[in-house]
Length: 296
Image (cartoon, rainbow, N blue to C red; front, side, top):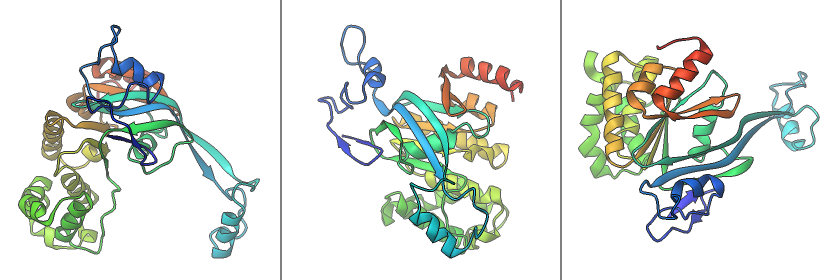
């Protein structure tokens, strides 16, 4: 059984996969081969001609900006305010991801990578098109919500509960999560409030919590850019392990080496449009020629 971005459950095919026609042309080419037989690979995410639009209200009215009454007025005027701006963040993006793939998302700043991940996770609505997922996507980002006034230990337990882990499973995995994060390498930091952590320590803990369980679809936004090389190697090894357990991993990163070391396929977004989709080495070579950055 699969779900779209609104949470709607979709009819499953007889073999448990998303039915061939459900996402139109984008899915049909992938789900069946030229002889009409079912393809061997199992799709987990289908994006079919996706548009994502942000609307910014009241951007052109400096008077009263920030005041509660002005904010209420903007809410009441939504849809008719001449000051509203429209930002087209993602334009007509289509792709199909399969179980066992690790897919990198690259592009210059503001190209729509994080926006697309949030839409796949169901956190942002699409303006047009559809996103279908088989299983529950889990978004892991540097800015993932943990509570700064709580200790690292408490955040581990709450974060795992939020992912659906039982208290017994959390107790079983707790020490492994702490050890993986390296939080206690230089002292007993796991018992301190997270507001005492450096940004790198907090990001490592977020990654460790999110990667504690196998996910149908794991979405990672810049998490590998934090921490030292030792932690990055552990993270890359964990992603490879997740792939072996039939999950699908998406990784947004500006670290080209992490993309090359971790991913076998890359989606290149530029100005919200899908500029390339293919094997990592091929797409990264084109991307590096475009940015003039060379192999980093």
